[in-house]
Length: 372
Image (cartoon, rainbow, N blue to C red; front, side, top):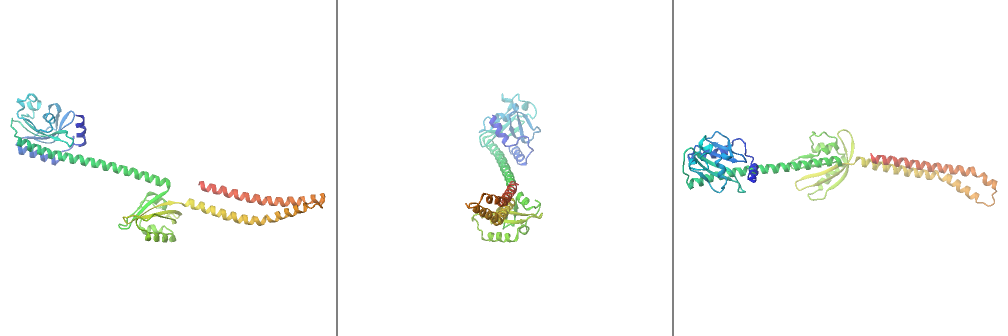
């Protein structure tokens, strides 16, 4: 019973508004069988509720009074009560002794694909009647039409749920991608050459300094790229074929807010006549590389200058050392060379300190710029 209720809920039918396709079936059954009352009933754990009804004002009844509850116990058969007053199960039933005065009842169970009976399509008369096997077969055919519509509804709900889940998963994946792009500073884009559609991710707008509501056209995009770099990109695009490996370039752009940036550009062509790619802001790296190049160049120039400067004190020191090695020189004469030796050594030491200070200062500047 619990499983039957779970399956019933999958159709999302209980307490829904009337629908013409079901109203038409109960009206047809009432006219065809000549019965004043016809119902599509659904039974949950405590009531029978009518999805469609003809000749009855009530929308539901307690399940313990429901003729349909007895009908669903044998899903493969049409349940017939020729005269409720002659049936011990129903002769004291409030629905027989009172409104709507059910004397005759015939119900065909509405059976799901899994074999569970959710309710019935039934016809009711206030007078005793007989129901032929042929009439029972026709009632079953009409009940099958009801069930077909139920199954179509459940399949539609399942598809909607699957689509909603797929959309949610796609949206979550997109949000993760956009967050990753923002953290990494990488934008992605594509151009469809058939439709002229252009897509920029939010990070592309940030990199190029363009508001996200700005329409992006090929011409607008090209104007942001340095002319000589644009020529390289156009040439690569013209040579590129679907399936070729992605190519990458380092280009300079002029953002809409007047800033110059270096980008690492990667692009490839796919089989849908689209050019797709990424853009990474490498301005900080290029500036750091430029500072290192300038530092090395300046250091080389300084070392060249110092190499000439130190020659003089070095030559003086060497000359004095040669003199002091002469065995014929007196102690007094040796002492007289001390001021000259110290002066040359001090001069050499000053040049060495100057070089060390230069190297230390520029190394610290480079480290700070790398961290920034």
